[in-house]
Length: 471
Image (tube, rainbow, N blue to C red; front, side, top):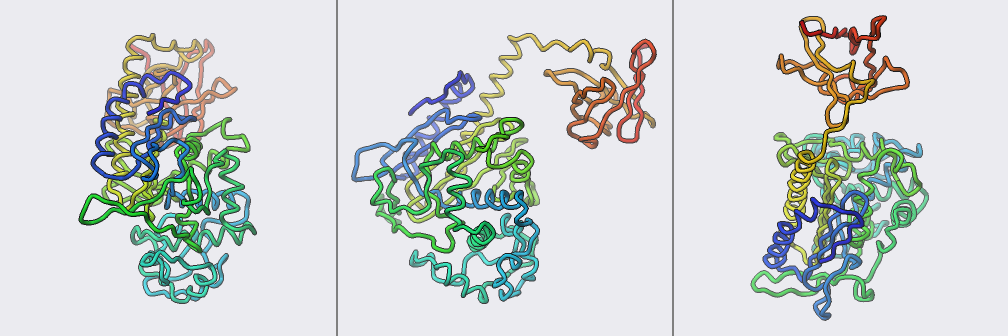
């Protein structure tokens, strides 16, 4: 186990006993030859633990630089490539697939129209497309070539209506890889390597690798159904389906991929940022939710809800390898779990358990900090704004300065809210504040003052709020 953080992290230290106990139990119970786990805190890999042996013929533990096949985590990079090409004006996410892949027009419309198969629906598993190509693949781990897949498109089926249900499709992402290649004019793997992996410094990550010839790559194993034994798994290239799961990566490299998801503002203006802030938000925005809102799917990312917390992530499984990465945007924390055995139970639960432990420790640490530190002082130019306001029809709201932020908040005098809660962001004009969040996000709250400088009220969203002075 290695602590790698370059700055003090009391919450991580507090959470580690619970996390290490959970990981030790998982490593013992799940019988994978090796388990590698990394914790990301904002922009760094803050902690790593390696259990077992990535190669049973060598007495060595996995490190943060051990290569694993990460399988369907590849799909998140495929979506990033699409978003880059969209931002460059080369395609639209609403484009029908056949616009970039005319051969797809011959596909069968058994459950839905071919024209409804758009890039966005493919990227969020709501295109209705069949799960796999109509060709030999998983049975013999002999996946189709590009030429074979294109020739088989007349046998591909749209099996259910678009948007009617979540329907996972490896075929969908294989075809998205072909779109990336055609639109960019470069092979899919070359595009992702040069436009995403290399700028992020993910230099250990590769698409094409023979594990037996690379001393840094874990060997993949398959479990025996009837005994505690494993056997080396076949090494199979996914061929035309590489965009759905061909990537090999390390804990250290995947930490950089997770850290990208937390970038915003000025830190995202560098060439290595890959995706602009608005595009990152789009990348993370759920497109579909299950009826109970417990989970959903974005463009390439799964979302899981636990209480009032939402975790983004994606897993993968290929012969010999299982993987899962997950992150909390609000907590700016992420987890990487890599194992060299598949099928493998429980990596999703393991990753979310670690994030839950980190969340609990973060809350406890913040509470302790609040108890011992004085609250931030209200800036003098905000003090006159504080207080209770009322709009027409008796709608109350109040302006307060708490947690270092000026807020439009719900009044304790009534349960009804209209424009609150929201943040008020000051502008160069002392009478204007930009609203962030809520019904009027992005609009301006315009304050009115009397001759002495006292606040009379403010206008927002078609309403005028008048300040109520104590009687």
